[in-house]
Image (cartoon, rainbow, N blue to C red; front, side, top):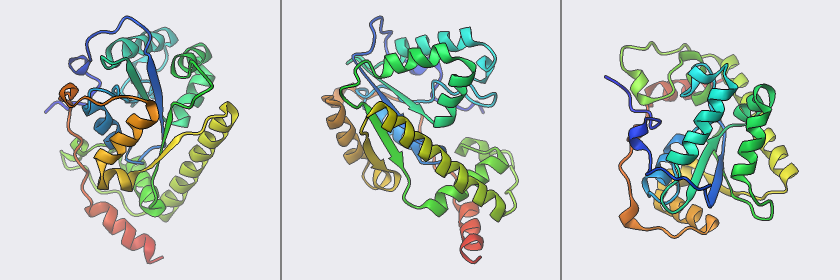
Length: 250
């Protein structure tokens, strides 16, 4: 069965020739629930489609462009055209490691991205997503790194459960802290104050999260603009629960 990731062109908005009038950045870290939030925002049809358009990791959605700066620029321009909602809003979901990779491998594109996302430094257009349960966050990240399973669809086919590893959890905790610190430093350098959301609150009341983001960005929501997009299914919680029991028990 072919997996719908959301990056397929069939989910594009009508092509937009002009630069987005309302770009924004969904700034987060891996395993924070950002895929769920991005789809909640996207489904409105008024808040762009904030996916990882700068994820050029070899196993990422645009891994085929990992060694081609020219292809990376083409993909960015295609995202701006096809993932800007009809009201002019474009969203990007990003992790610090993706921006750091661009700084190293394609600084020209990074400069272009910052100009496109933050055309005016006088107002923040950054939404920051955190996860309150730090232990659950680290366990989720550690298990994904060890297993290579990042989505519900990847659980099919009998992927074996990774063996509990306190070392892996501790490493995941460090990686999360380092990436959060990178966002803190980047936003402080740009003098931007983001809208802060928490994953647990988004899950409890996704409608409230949508309203907060729309108000923050100054976007009027239109129920008639809603679009059909791939569903985000929650991964099995059996493994995480078993790890949490081991981790909490020392």
